[in-house]
Length: 152
Image (cartoon, rainbow, N blue to C red):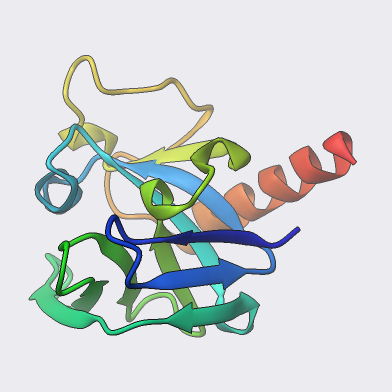
């Protein structure tokens, strides 16, 4: 199930072979990054990135945890495409809205719900008030695998 996407101007393109999970993030950094109420995050294992073509620039910010978060964006149109977080060793996260068909993902979790706008929650069963931990990530992976098996 290859899924493709890219930036608004088409200068950067990517393709993944599969994803681990898709979630909503209500943190203030995602609100700033997207200019919206939340961000959609699609987590993948690094080997599942089949193609990433085009020039990007990187913006690095220091998260509340003290870890660096590196965001890759298109220097032409400023679309954020992916980011890497130290806690996700061997993984990266792609912006859900950058995919050609964001409807391909089932959102299985919401994190930083304590920062969510009152009208911004989508009602996932899996939630975290703050930063995700490994049990939350594993639950999202299991929920995504179950949903994929059910659809097949």
